Image (cartoon, rainbow, N blue to C red; front, side, top):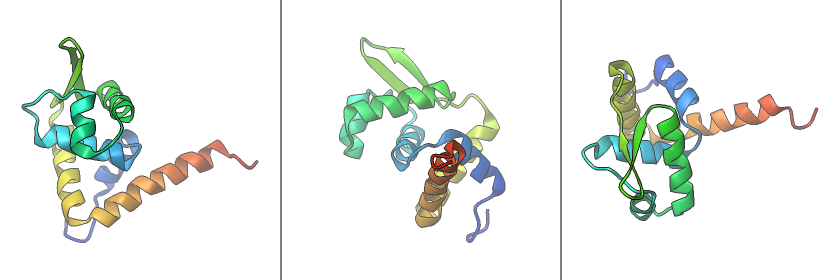
Length: 123
């Protein structure tokens, strides 16, 4: 990725896997601290979000194969590196979010707009 561009592959990955900035930040937290299993409460405290929202986002990441969940006795989530290409895309996403934060935020919000227009709320 050049300093001014977001790759098409990263755009597609983001569109398929990220539903909000909150979920993006959770994925990147799990990725950066992949040796730790996180409870929704831990994630909520770290990112200053609601525990229920953290739980929902973590569950979605697990359903997409980007995190694993184990009960210990409460659910704990950890980043999953089950696919080398996806792992590289998460790394690229992290780097892009650090360097081109506004572009990544705009990409995530454009996904929300696409989802709204797909629903054809006003037809």
